[in-house]
Length: 415
Image 1 (tube, rainbow, N blue to C red):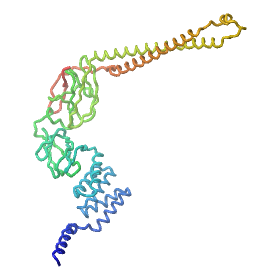
Image 2 (cartoon, rainbow, N blue to C red; image 1 turned 180 degrees about the vertical axis):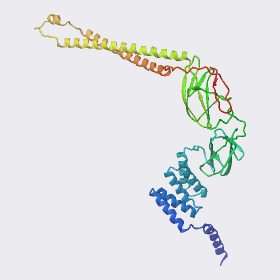
Image 3 (cartoon, rainbow, N blue to C red; image 1 turned 90 degrees about the vertical axis):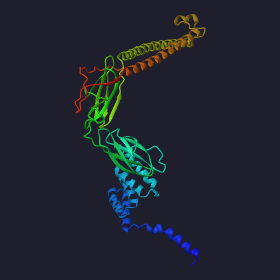
Image 4 (tube, helix red, strand yellow; image 1 turned 30 degrees about the horizontal axis):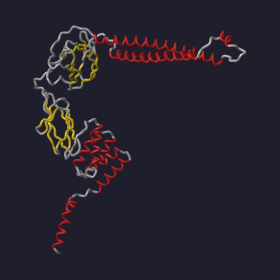
Protein backbone atom coordinates (compact mmCIF):
# COMPACT_ATOMS: atom_id res chain seq x y z
CA UNK A 1 0.00 0.00 0.00
CA UNK A 2 1.44 3.34 -1.00
CA UNK A 3 1.86 6.27 1.38
CA UNK A 4 -0.82 8.32 -0.48
CA UNK A 5 -3.42 5.58 -0.17
CA UNK A 6 -2.61 5.14 3.51
CA UNK A 7 -3.11 8.84 4.23
CA UNK A 8 -6.41 8.81 2.33
CA UNK A 9 -7.68 5.83 4.33
CA UNK A 10 -6.68 7.50 7.60
CA UNK A 11 -8.54 10.74 6.66
CA UNK A 12 -11.61 8.74 5.62
CA UNK A 13 -11.56 6.89 8.93
CA UNK A 14 -11.27 10.17 10.88
CA UNK A 15 -14.24 11.64 9.00
CA UNK A 16 -16.33 8.55 9.60
CA UNK A 17 -15.38 8.25 13.27
CA UNK A 18 -18.02 10.73 14.55
CA UNK A 19 -20.70 8.87 12.65
CA UNK A 20 -19.60 5.55 14.10
CA UNK A 21 -19.41 7.13 17.57
CA UNK A 22 -23.08 8.20 17.51
CA UNK A 23 -25.29 5.40 18.83
CA UNK A 24 -28.01 4.40 16.44
CA UNK A 25 -31.47 4.75 18.02
CA UNK A 26 -33.18 1.41 18.64
CA UNK A 27 -36.00 0.33 16.30
CA UNK A 28 -38.45 0.77 19.15
CA UNK A 29 -37.60 4.50 19.20
CA UNK A 30 -38.42 4.93 15.53
CA UNK A 31 -41.70 3.10 16.03
CA UNK A 32 -42.77 5.18 19.05
CA UNK A 33 -41.57 8.47 17.56
CA UNK A 34 -43.38 7.93 14.26
CA UNK A 35 -46.54 6.84 16.08
CA UNK A 36 -46.38 10.03 18.18
CA UNK A 37 -45.90 12.25 15.11
CA UNK A 38 -48.79 10.56 13.30
CA UNK A 39 -51.10 10.93 16.30
CA UNK A 40 -50.15 14.59 16.63
CA UNK A 41 -50.98 15.30 13.00
CA UNK A 42 -54.34 13.55 13.45
CA UNK A 43 -55.13 15.74 16.47
CA UNK A 44 -54.94 12.81 18.91
CA UNK A 45 -52.85 14.74 21.42
CA UNK A 46 -53.09 12.42 24.43
CA UNK A 47 -52.05 9.46 22.29
CA UNK A 48 -49.24 11.52 20.75
CA UNK A 49 -47.95 12.54 24.17
CA UNK A 50 -47.80 8.91 25.33
CA UNK A 51 -45.78 7.75 22.29
CA UNK A 52 -43.44 10.76 22.31
CA UNK A 53 -42.66 10.36 26.00
CA UNK A 54 -41.81 6.70 25.36
CA UNK A 55 -39.56 7.73 22.46
CA UNK A 56 -37.79 10.32 24.64
CA UNK A 57 -36.98 7.63 27.20
CA UNK A 58 -35.59 5.31 24.51
CA UNK A 59 -33.30 8.04 23.05
CA UNK A 60 -32.87 10.76 25.69
CA UNK A 61 -30.20 12.64 23.69
CA UNK A 62 -32.35 13.27 20.61
CA UNK A 63 -34.31 16.57 20.47
CA UNK A 64 -37.08 15.41 18.11
CA UNK A 65 -39.46 13.89 20.70
CA UNK A 66 -39.15 16.94 22.94
CA UNK A 67 -39.86 19.31 20.03
CA UNK A 68 -43.08 17.46 19.24
CA UNK A 69 -43.96 17.23 22.94
CA UNK A 70 -43.76 21.04 23.00
CA UNK A 71 -46.09 21.21 19.98
CA UNK A 72 -48.56 18.84 21.70
CA UNK A 73 -48.49 20.97 24.87
CA UNK A 74 -49.09 24.12 22.81
CA UNK A 75 -52.10 22.52 21.13
CA UNK A 76 -53.49 21.68 24.59
CA UNK A 77 -52.73 25.18 25.99
CA UNK A 78 -50.25 23.74 28.51
CA UNK A 79 -47.89 26.68 28.16
CA UNK A 80 -45.43 25.80 30.94
CA UNK A 81 -45.00 22.24 29.61
CA UNK A 82 -44.56 23.62 26.09
CA UNK A 83 -41.78 25.96 27.24
CA UNK A 84 -40.03 23.21 29.23
CA UNK A 85 -40.07 20.73 26.33
CA UNK A 86 -38.89 23.34 23.83
CA UNK A 87 -36.02 24.30 26.15
CA UNK A 88 -34.99 20.64 26.41
CA UNK A 89 -34.95 20.32 22.61
CA UNK A 90 -32.84 23.49 22.25
CA UNK A 91 -30.45 22.39 24.98
CA UNK A 92 -29.95 18.94 23.42
CA UNK A 93 -29.04 20.30 19.98
CA UNK A 94 -28.62 24.09 19.62
CA UNK A 95 -27.42 23.64 16.00
CA UNK A 96 -30.35 21.50 14.84
CA UNK A 97 -31.82 22.23 11.42
CA UNK A 98 -35.15 22.71 13.24
CA UNK A 99 -33.78 25.14 15.81
CA UNK A 100 -35.60 28.22 14.45
CA UNK A 101 -38.94 26.40 14.46
CA UNK A 102 -38.28 25.25 18.03
CA UNK A 103 -37.44 28.79 19.13
CA UNK A 104 -40.59 30.10 17.50
CA UNK A 105 -42.61 27.45 19.33
CA UNK A 106 -40.91 28.39 22.61
CA UNK A 107 -41.55 32.13 22.15
CA UNK A 108 -45.17 31.57 21.15
CA UNK A 109 -45.88 29.60 24.34
CA UNK A 110 -44.15 32.28 26.45
CA UNK A 111 -46.33 34.96 24.90
CA UNK A 112 -49.48 32.89 25.44
CA UNK A 113 -48.45 32.40 29.07
CA UNK A 114 -48.24 36.18 29.53
CA UNK A 115 -44.50 36.31 30.07
CA UNK A 116 -42.58 39.48 29.09
CA UNK A 117 -40.99 39.50 25.66
CA UNK A 118 -37.39 40.41 24.83
CA UNK A 119 -36.89 43.30 22.42
CA UNK A 120 -33.11 43.35 22.33
CA UNK A 121 -30.47 41.42 20.42
CA UNK A 122 -29.44 37.95 21.56
CA UNK A 123 -26.14 37.95 19.69
CA UNK A 124 -24.37 34.70 20.53
CA UNK A 125 -26.17 34.38 23.88
CA UNK A 126 -29.66 34.34 25.32
CA UNK A 127 -31.71 36.34 27.81
CA UNK A 128 -32.78 36.05 31.46
CA UNK A 129 -36.05 37.07 33.12
CA UNK A 130 -36.57 36.89 36.90
CA UNK A 131 -39.86 37.07 38.79
CA UNK A 132 -40.68 36.61 42.47
CA UNK A 133 -43.65 36.56 44.81
CA UNK A 134 -42.41 39.87 46.25
CA UNK A 135 -42.07 42.99 44.14
CA UNK A 136 -38.98 45.15 44.50
CA UNK A 137 -36.62 42.37 45.63
CA UNK A 138 -32.99 43.00 44.58
CA UNK A 139 -31.85 40.58 41.86
CA UNK A 140 -28.23 39.43 41.89
CA UNK A 141 -26.75 37.24 39.14
CA UNK A 142 -23.37 35.67 39.84
CA UNK A 143 -22.73 38.29 42.51
CA UNK A 144 -23.67 41.31 40.37
CA UNK A 145 -26.83 43.35 40.97
CA UNK A 146 -29.09 43.72 37.93
CA UNK A 147 -32.22 45.42 39.28
CA UNK A 148 -35.36 44.43 41.15
CA UNK A 149 -38.22 42.00 40.67
CA UNK A 150 -39.87 41.69 38.30
CA UNK A 151 -36.67 41.82 36.20
CA UNK A 152 -37.48 42.29 32.51
CA UNK A 153 -35.64 40.03 30.04
CA UNK A 154 -32.07 41.15 29.40
CA UNK A 155 -29.21 39.67 27.41
CA UNK A 156 -26.85 37.22 29.10
CA UNK A 157 -24.00 34.96 28.03
CA UNK A 158 -24.71 31.24 27.60
CA UNK A 159 -24.31 28.87 30.49
CA UNK A 160 -25.68 28.17 33.95
CA UNK A 161 -26.20 31.14 36.27
CA UNK A 162 -26.98 31.47 39.97
CA UNK A 163 -29.60 34.07 40.82
CA UNK A 164 -30.65 35.47 44.21
CA UNK A 165 -33.51 37.76 45.22
CA UNK A 166 -33.35 39.62 48.54
CA UNK A 167 -35.45 42.17 50.38
CA UNK A 168 -35.65 43.47 53.92
CA UNK A 169 -38.06 41.42 55.98
CA UNK A 170 -37.75 38.36 53.72
CA UNK A 171 -35.35 35.45 53.51
CA UNK A 172 -33.08 35.53 50.47
CA UNK A 173 -34.16 33.13 47.71
CA UNK A 174 -31.65 31.44 45.42
CA UNK A 175 -32.14 29.61 42.14
CA UNK A 176 -30.25 28.38 39.12
CA UNK A 177 -31.09 28.29 35.43
CA UNK A 178 -29.29 27.73 32.15
CA UNK A 179 -29.12 30.50 29.56
CA UNK A 180 -29.93 28.94 26.18
CA UNK A 181 -29.09 30.52 22.81
CA UNK A 182 -31.69 32.73 21.18
CA UNK A 183 -34.45 32.42 23.80
CA UNK A 184 -35.47 33.92 27.16
CA UNK A 185 -34.78 31.75 30.20
CA UNK A 186 -37.36 32.41 32.94
CA UNK A 187 -36.62 31.94 36.63
CA UNK A 188 -39.24 32.31 39.35
CA UNK A 189 -38.08 32.69 42.94
CA UNK A 190 -40.14 32.43 46.13
CA UNK A 191 -39.14 34.50 49.14
CA UNK A 192 -40.27 33.47 52.61
CA UNK A 193 -41.06 35.89 55.40
CA UNK A 194 -38.25 36.31 57.89
CA UNK A 195 -39.81 35.89 61.31
CA UNK A 196 -36.58 36.99 62.99
CA UNK A 197 -36.62 40.34 61.21
CA UNK A 198 -37.59 43.38 63.26
CA UNK A 199 -39.36 44.93 60.29
CA UNK A 200 -43.02 45.42 61.21
CA UNK A 201 -46.05 46.76 59.47
CA UNK A 202 -44.29 50.06 58.82
CA UNK A 203 -41.34 48.56 56.95
CA UNK A 204 -40.75 46.89 53.61
CA UNK A 205 -42.83 43.82 54.43
CA UNK A 206 -46.59 44.26 54.85
CA UNK A 207 -48.62 42.04 57.15
CA UNK A 208 -49.43 38.63 55.68
CA UNK A 209 -51.67 38.58 52.60
CA UNK A 210 -51.69 42.39 52.24
CA UNK A 211 -50.46 44.94 49.71
CA UNK A 212 -49.83 48.69 49.74
CA UNK A 213 -51.75 51.68 48.41
CA UNK A 214 -50.21 55.14 48.38
CA UNK A 215 -52.37 58.20 47.74
CA UNK A 216 -50.57 61.34 46.61
CA UNK A 217 -52.90 64.31 47.01
CA UNK A 218 -53.17 67.80 48.52
CA UNK A 219 -52.34 68.59 52.11
CA UNK A 220 -55.22 68.41 54.55
CA UNK A 221 -57.16 65.85 52.54
CA UNK A 222 -59.19 63.10 54.16
CA UNK A 223 -59.08 59.60 52.70
CA UNK A 224 -61.75 56.96 53.17
CA UNK A 225 -61.17 53.40 51.98
CA UNK A 226 -64.27 51.29 51.50
CA UNK A 227 -66.31 53.88 53.37
CA UNK A 228 -64.14 54.21 56.46
CA UNK A 229 -60.94 56.01 57.49
CA UNK A 230 -57.65 54.14 57.15
CA UNK A 231 -54.15 54.84 58.39
CA UNK A 232 -50.80 54.91 56.64
CA UNK A 233 -47.40 53.66 57.73
CA UNK A 234 -44.36 55.88 58.10
CA UNK A 235 -43.92 55.82 54.31
CA UNK A 236 -47.40 57.15 53.68
CA UNK A 237 -48.91 53.86 52.49
CA UNK A 238 -52.14 52.06 53.30
CA UNK A 239 -51.92 48.31 53.98
CA UNK A 240 -54.95 46.64 52.36
CA UNK A 241 -56.09 43.14 51.43
CA UNK A 242 -55.58 42.23 47.77
CA UNK A 243 -58.47 43.14 45.47
CA UNK A 244 -60.49 46.21 44.42
CA UNK A 245 -61.11 49.01 46.91
CA UNK A 246 -63.24 52.16 46.75
CA UNK A 247 -61.15 55.19 47.68
CA UNK A 248 -62.67 58.61 48.46
CA UNK A 249 -60.47 61.69 48.77
CA UNK A 250 -61.89 65.01 50.02
CA UNK A 251 -60.51 68.32 51.29
CA UNK A 252 -61.98 71.67 52.38
CA UNK A 253 -62.77 73.88 49.39
CA UNK A 254 -62.05 71.10 46.90
CA UNK A 255 -64.13 68.67 44.90
CA UNK A 256 -64.36 65.14 46.28
CA UNK A 257 -62.78 62.44 44.08
CA UNK A 258 -63.65 58.73 44.07
CA UNK A 259 -61.49 55.98 42.59
CA UNK A 260 -61.74 52.20 42.36
CA UNK A 261 -58.21 50.86 42.86
CA UNK A 262 -56.87 47.32 42.59
CA UNK A 263 -54.23 46.28 45.14
CA UNK A 264 -52.00 43.23 44.58
CA UNK A 265 -50.47 41.18 47.37
CA UNK A 266 -46.95 42.27 48.25
CA UNK A 267 -46.96 45.15 45.75
CA UNK A 268 -47.35 48.91 46.03
CA UNK A 269 -49.95 50.77 43.99
CA UNK A 270 -49.62 54.58 43.74
CA UNK A 271 -52.41 56.92 42.64
CA UNK A 272 -52.02 60.69 42.21
CA UNK A 273 -55.19 62.71 42.87
CA UNK A 274 -55.03 66.47 42.31
CA UNK A 275 -58.29 67.63 43.87
CA UNK A 276 -59.90 70.44 41.87
CA UNK A 277 -60.99 73.54 43.77
CA UNK A 278 -64.71 74.13 44.03
CA UNK A 279 -64.23 77.67 42.69
CA UNK A 280 -62.75 76.29 39.47
CA UNK A 281 -65.55 73.74 39.24
CA UNK A 282 -68.14 76.50 39.78
CA UNK A 283 -66.56 78.61 37.00
CA UNK A 284 -66.76 75.69 34.62
CA UNK A 285 -70.39 75.07 35.51
CA UNK A 286 -71.16 78.77 35.03
CA UNK A 287 -69.45 78.70 31.64
CA UNK A 288 -71.51 75.64 30.77
CA UNK A 289 -74.74 77.42 31.69
CA UNK A 290 -73.73 80.48 29.64
CA UNK A 291 -72.93 78.25 26.69
CA UNK A 292 -76.27 76.48 27.00
CA UNK A 293 -78.11 79.83 27.16
CA UNK A 294 -76.21 81.05 24.10
CA UNK A 295 -77.09 77.86 22.24
CA UNK A 296 -80.80 78.35 23.02
CA UNK A 297 -80.69 82.04 22.08
CA UNK A 298 -78.84 81.61 18.80
CA UNK A 299 -81.01 78.63 17.98
CA UNK A 300 -84.10 80.82 18.42
CA UNK A 301 -82.54 83.53 16.23
CA UNK A 302 -81.78 80.92 13.59
CA UNK A 303 -85.37 79.69 13.63
CA UNK A 304 -86.82 83.21 13.39
CA UNK A 305 -84.53 84.31 10.57
CA UNK A 306 -85.29 81.05 8.75
CA UNK A 307 -89.01 81.94 8.88
CA UNK A 308 -88.29 85.49 7.66
CA UNK A 309 -86.19 84.11 4.81
CA UNK A 310 -88.94 81.72 3.82
CA UNK A 311 -91.54 84.49 3.85
CA UNK A 312 -89.37 86.83 1.74
CA UNK A 313 -88.78 84.03 -0.75
CA UNK A 314 -92.50 83.23 -0.92
CA UNK A 315 -93.30 86.91 -1.49
CA UNK A 316 -90.71 87.13 -4.28
CA UNK A 317 -92.09 83.95 -5.87
CA UNK A 318 -95.68 85.31 -5.71
CA UNK A 319 -94.60 88.64 -7.27
CA UNK A 320 -92.80 86.84 -10.07
CA UNK A 321 -95.86 84.65 -10.73
CA UNK A 322 -98.14 87.71 -10.85
CA UNK A 323 -96.00 89.60 -13.31
CA UNK A 324 -95.37 86.62 -15.60
CA UNK A 325 -99.10 85.79 -15.81
CA UNK A 326 -100.45 89.37 -16.11
CA UNK A 327 -102.49 89.89 -19.38
CA UNK A 328 -100.55 91.85 -21.99
CA UNK A 329 -103.26 92.39 -24.67
CA UNK A 330 -105.24 95.52 -25.36
CA UNK A 331 -108.48 93.89 -24.27
CA UNK A 332 -107.36 94.13 -20.62
CA UNK A 333 -105.68 97.48 -19.99
CA UNK A 334 -102.79 97.56 -17.44
CA UNK A 335 -104.78 100.01 -15.32
CA UNK A 336 -107.49 97.37 -14.92
CA UNK A 337 -105.16 94.49 -13.94
CA UNK A 338 -103.29 96.57 -11.39
CA UNK A 339 -106.58 97.14 -9.56
CA UNK A 340 -106.59 93.38 -8.80
CA UNK A 341 -102.83 92.92 -8.12
CA UNK A 342 -100.34 95.72 -7.66
CA UNK A 343 -97.57 96.08 -10.20
CA UNK A 344 -94.17 94.65 -9.17
CA UNK A 345 -91.09 95.96 -10.87
CA UNK A 346 -88.11 93.69 -11.59
CA UNK A 347 -85.86 95.44 -9.03
CA UNK A 348 -88.55 94.89 -6.37
CA UNK A 349 -88.59 91.14 -7.05
CA UNK A 350 -84.80 90.99 -7.01
CA UNK A 351 -84.81 92.92 -3.72
CA UNK A 352 -87.18 90.35 -2.18
CA UNK A 353 -84.90 87.50 -3.31
CA UNK A 354 -81.83 89.28 -1.88
CA UNK A 355 -83.66 89.82 1.42
CA UNK A 356 -84.50 86.10 1.57
CA UNK A 357 -80.84 85.23 1.00
CA UNK A 358 -79.71 87.64 3.73
CA UNK A 359 -82.12 86.15 6.27
CA UNK A 360 -81.01 82.65 5.23
CA UNK A 361 -77.36 83.58 5.80
CA UNK A 362 -78.17 84.98 9.25
CA UNK A 363 -80.10 81.78 10.01
CA UNK A 364 -77.19 79.52 8.99
CA UNK A 365 -74.73 81.54 11.06
CA UNK A 366 -77.07 81.49 14.08
CA UNK A 367 -77.50 77.74 13.86
CA UNK A 368 -73.73 77.30 13.59
CA UNK A 369 -73.06 79.48 16.63
CA UNK A 370 -75.79 77.61 18.51
CA UNK A 371 -74.13 74.27 17.70
CA UNK A 372 -70.72 75.53 18.83
CA UNK A 373 -72.23 76.95 22.03
CA UNK A 374 -74.00 73.68 22.76
CA UNK A 375 -70.76 71.73 22.25
CA UNK A 376 -68.89 74.13 24.53
CA UNK A 377 -71.61 73.78 27.16
CA UNK A 378 -71.55 69.99 27.03
CA UNK A 379 -67.75 70.00 27.33
CA UNK A 380 -67.84 72.27 30.37
CA UNK A 381 -70.55 70.20 32.06
CA UNK A 382 -68.57 67.02 31.35
CA UNK A 383 -65.54 68.53 33.11
CA UNK A 384 -67.63 69.87 35.95
CA UNK A 385 -70.21 67.25 36.98
CA UNK A 386 -72.30 67.76 40.06
CA UNK A 387 -70.36 66.81 43.17
CA UNK A 388 -71.66 64.09 45.45
CA UNK A 389 -71.65 64.84 49.13
CA UNK A 390 -68.49 63.66 50.86
CA UNK A 391 -68.49 61.64 54.05
CA UNK A 392 -67.77 63.73 57.12
CA UNK A 393 -66.14 62.42 60.25
CA UNK A 394 -63.71 63.58 62.89
CA UNK A 395 -60.95 61.00 63.26
CA UNK A 396 -57.58 61.62 64.90
CA UNK A 397 -54.43 60.83 62.96
CA UNK A 398 -52.82 57.84 64.66
CA UNK A 399 -49.72 55.84 63.76
CA UNK A 400 -50.07 52.38 62.26
CA UNK A 401 -49.35 49.59 64.70
CA UNK A 402 -47.16 46.55 64.19
CA UNK A 403 -49.90 43.91 64.16
CA UNK A 404 -52.16 45.64 61.66
CA UNK A 405 -54.40 47.88 63.82
CA UNK A 406 -55.04 50.76 61.45
CA UNK A 407 -56.47 54.26 61.95
CA UNK A 408 -56.45 57.23 59.55
CA UNK A 409 -53.81 59.38 57.87
CA UNK A 410 -53.05 61.02 54.51
CA UNK A 411 -49.99 61.77 52.41
CA UNK A 412 -49.91 64.77 50.14
CA UNK A 413 -48.24 67.85 48.78
CA UNK A 414 -48.92 71.53 49.31
CA UNK A 415 -51.52 72.88 46.88
